[in-house]
Length: 182
Image (cartoon, rainbow, N blue to C red; front, top):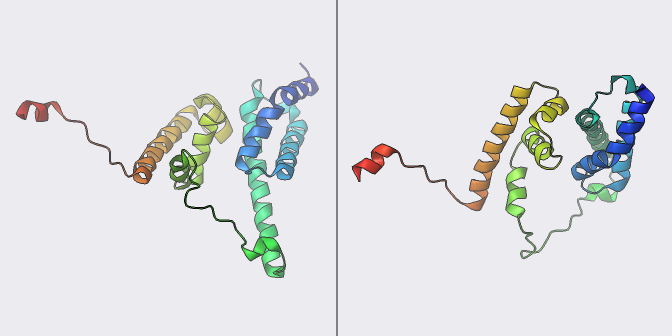
């Protein structure tokens, strides 16, 4: 298969997966989603000779880089607006939800918010994008064992945060010697 055909196939098969990947990270800002996805496939086109046989994890890696660029650009834009001082984005107008507006499962989101961005991304890649550990390693640009360890540690930290948010304390398991004493 020629590089052009490989790109065409990757585009047709993975456009929507990459779009969903980007949209989940940009919180429903459709114009930005389209821009980032367009940049992802522009990079893929320029590097079409380097496309791996299974391109989706590679495309996710490119998307992560494009998202980082978009976030940095948005930060520069906000700093510029703050210096100008005459824009609604800089006035801090926010809508606060009512006390009874808690969504089901919001405690999971709160626990996720307490994690580092690196932990959140590893968990999102495996849960939302349903990546295997090998694919996760490709996206993160590391080895399989490093990716597996990052996932394991992120899951442990999430469990600890969930216990904190829910107010539950895990009960340690009894040992056989404790059972024999009773």
